[in-house]
Amino acid sequence: MSIFNQMSDSSKDEGRHLSQDIHTNGFIQNPYSAYASMHEAGGRVFWEDYGFWCFANFDEVNALLRDRRFGREVPEGVRGGDRSHLQWFDRVERHSLLELEAPAHTRLRKAVNRAFVSSSIERLKPEIERLSNALIDRFESDESVDLLPAYATPIPLRVIAALLGVPEELERPMLDWSHAMVRMYTLTATRDEELAADAACRDFHAALSELTAHKRRHPAADLLSDLAGSELTDDELISTAVLLMNAGHEATVHQTGNAVFTLLSKADDAHTLLSTPEGAAAAIEEALRIEAPLHLFTRYAKEHVDFGDGVSVAKGGQIGLLLGAANRDPKAFTAPDAFLPGRSDQKNVTFGAGIHFCIGAPLARMEMAISVATLFKRLPKLALNDQPRFADTFHFHGLETLTINPQG
Ligand code: HEM
Image (cartoon, rainbow, N blue to C red; front, side, top):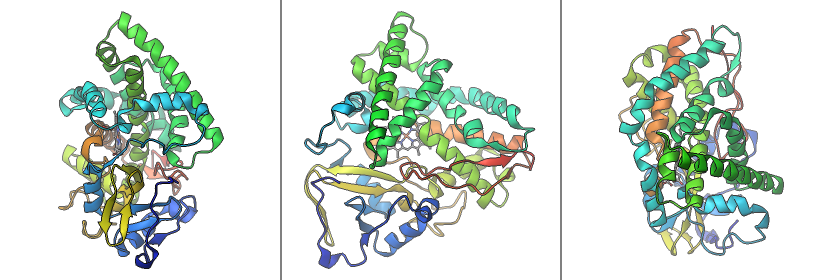
């Protein structure tokens, strides 16, 4: 909890204080009933366990993501305590565009932006289709397969690695380093998790330094070669590559699982829906709204902000933006809990908004539309083997396993 967080005025906070342990099974499996209570309380709640005000209304979350009075950059003095065991982690984070504000953010984002616009990623379509089919070939006659490792993970991992120019043999170690690093985003990382994240950053840094040196000697048609020839410093380049490798697969893996599970459990006729590109795009978009993989992002106030109604945050204090709750705001959506692909009020904040809006959104949408549609096309009898459970990781709302029978 930040020392800057402003406690609320208790006289005005009746019903707006929330004590909710994110590790309780009921919350993990269904956070939406807690979000519904937040909406009933007006959409602003002081979440005691985090120690800051959280926002759950769609319009307010959308506006706060764009509000320049707030930023992601950690204010001076907030990260107190001895961080000598986190030297590598801090070194990689220091130049991560996700953690920076303008002008440093603008410069780094510009260096990679072109590689992720729709016209650049279109050319990846055939490779995503080929990869999806090759993976299905491997398990289509099995009786039981966990789609997360067998299908949802390798597609975005291979795609982002190929885009950057990372060779296949580095994918596995990079996956492990990425998993160790994202434990830091739980807001409750243990000392052992911190040490593991730091070691992962050290090894990630070393592998990418070596690879970048190779790209400088032998440039290829990939993003790492482009960045190696750009004006970015070595540390900026490595931080950017680490962020892209990690962000390029983690959320997409979980969301591919969430989308397949949503379609199998909530769609009337998923096969027909997914049989056209328009239907597949609508299904993916509605799954992104109703079962987003990232539910909470925080921001620091750059100045004292008074929201009125007894809610304020001091300069340097934190607020929480509940993307998963905003996507189910009853004031913003008709039947917010219903899966209605193509709904007239389709919108979501799943990829954020404002200057940090997800640079990989077009890529993630394209990957999921192709991989999920191919799966249902190839396996017309596809069925769930067990009722899947969401994993105890609030920073990623994703399934523990997604075991299906390809033959129904
Ligand atoms: C379903 C998949 C994905 C979801 C839900 C997702 C979600 C998000 C969100 C919510 C943010 C903004 C965070 C904030 O405002 O604090 C973000 C930023 C980012 N995402 Fe994604 N993402 C996904 C896939 C990808 C992919 C495939 C890439 C590949 C490059 C990627 C790269 C990034 C980067 C680099 C940023 C930082 C942008 C900046 O700070 O300017 N993401 N993502």
